[in-house]
Image (cartoon, rainbow, N blue to C red; front, side, top):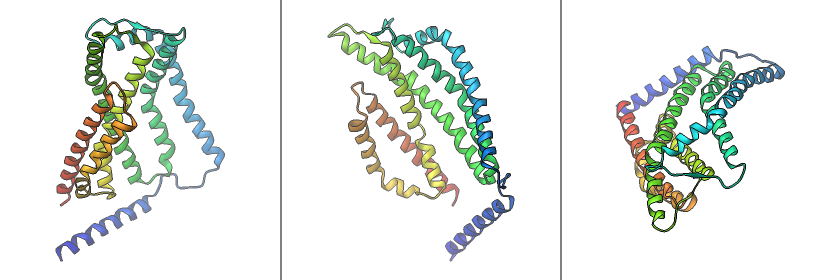
Length: 263
């Protein structure tokens, strides 16, 4: 009987929240001509693209020094970096400048997207957007930091020591930079796992009990993807699998806490 009362109260609370959203409604809940939407979208894109282009031009002259620091910080010894085509170093510098500009302008891009969508969003939807985007960016940054300062030095030190017994190691600038990018993006996404699990439980898409019951199946999927889908000879995929499982366990702890909090 007590359980039925709790369910009724929860449904009533959800109904009241929906009514409040409907009453408050989106800020700009009115018909606007398509051309006005397109004009505003173009204006907001220009606001992002201008600083993005300026940052590329500012970063590029300093990309030689930045890339030298980026590479040498990964190795315990002074390892020379080689290029194997005339355009390889220029392409690496351009890609590095592009990524630096993108990293700086992503908050501005997200703000402009939110500002463009905001008039048509309910208050709860605006709050949800902010609650998801900010933690997601922070977790992505932590994952990229972890990859660069902990994973990559460990991997490269092992590979160089192992290869050095057989042949002299020649490091390609393009391949090293591609490995850095691949690893940073991969771990940035992996660190989103606890947030995704928390959101899924909060939105009642899954429950803590269901996630716990499917733990071994999820472990199998993670290991299968790491070994057969994104397998690489450097061993980074195996480290990704281990960190993914650790992030899943962290997500389980968080969702368990959420379940106890709502009781």
